[in-house]
Length: 323
Image (cartoon, rainbow, N blue to C red; front, side, top):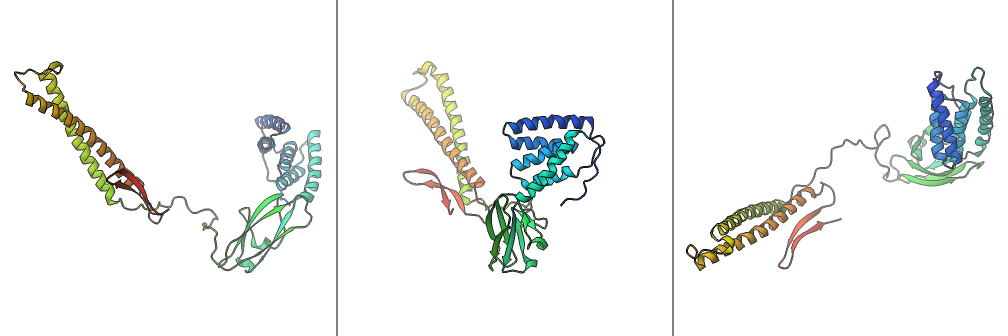
């Protein structure tokens, strides 16, 4: 059943030319087997000119895709499009084909009827494929496309019941689905008054406080990096002194005796070794601290943590918590 079509302005020459091109391209895609792509072209063409030919091609594409309800609706629209002045024969032929299509599709569209027990009708909320069924229409057969459909039924104080049903094309009798609601807590997710999901701008859950070991690791890491920088400076000074007093790695015995040369060599090696070692320790400490800050769990979720591991035989970090 359909109401009167809304008044629509006469399409422009650009609209007609664009629709003609879309119709040709859509037919090429359909003949090549791309019915879904053809349907998009037919839909765009029909939106531009709303002609019997574009509507018929759109209805046939929907029929080929198993969208029998949509195909019948469009074919019905074609039949009832206002007659144009000096309408071309192609439009007349399209109207006749659409009228025959409406009749044959009507016999092919299956229907589903729900029988819900356990709760009063004014409490029941039923959906098919996510679309709500008005309570007043719940006891009556509902037309659906052939294929698989999901039915969900709930009521206050009852568990949500779900069923999956397969409808076959041209089934004469409605497929009956019986559902008995059982008292319990509904498993249906909460939705707002408009039926949509919870608002997306809800504030995020707060994170747990930064663990003390993360602060300690960060402090040790920063101190180690500072020590590494100091020894690097000392190493550079020792290297400059060697270059100045011992050109070519040969020291003047008049200014340096054996003990002073050994002390300078030891200073060179010690500063270099400590600078590298403390630098590595510092980077590891800072890395562990950053991991502890960024990866700390949110409040109310599973508690997991990145914990430093120090044993006589190994050093590193490990995950700790419940998953």
